[in-house]
Image (cartoon, rainbow, N blue to C red; front, side, top):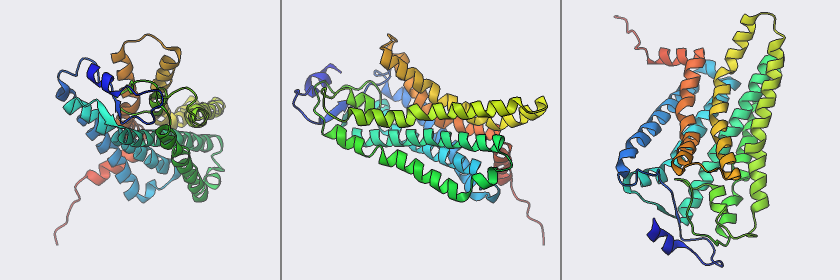
Length: 322
């Protein structure tokens, strides 16, 4: 790494650096191909699980309902996020390649953040769906119509693409005063912006993008669950509360799986907590790679309709004799 550092440190007046340097998992640089096996395994299992969710929802007309449509979008975001991360992760794993060009880094950064915000937005939409279904069950079909769902999809697309499209251009025209050494195995906006010279511009817009998505969404999600909890307390029997709560179990697990590592990473970076670099890197991997792997399992286990439809599709059909 030392040779990279000496060749890539720019002057204070330089614009976008020709390369950025990624950090691999400490201790595995001597045997880079070893950790390619679990990486590929995680990616293939994620693709298989989310692909099964996409396949069954697309083919089954009985699953063409708001809750399952949002689950379809969640699986799309999971596949996109894990795919966007793989190029640099596999480059480090197979060839110990730390250097990545600025254009490739900006492209990866854009897609990683687009799919991350898409996942956050879909989790918020799913929380709204559950809140309406439990708090307003009689009005639910009239409130969450196909037209409303279409508008939600347009809003998600605008948040993902419209808000993040300026970020690569802002970073590309910023002057960089620090060595272009990132703290992760992939390109992330806060990591790249940290290397820019003070007063380079774009900091206010970047803060707005973060607060309007990753800052606002978890607050609204837990507010929705506060409303759900109040309604559940008013239900007569514990069995009714259990049945209603079970419809939220998979979603709440997905929410915690997505946001808890993200909040921990943000606190560690903001408070500059002295944790070992391997722990920081592993927590980052958990945040980005674990939700795409676990979400299909959560929804297949917790949602009876998904499980039964997949089993029915996989069962061999009996062919009668003429």
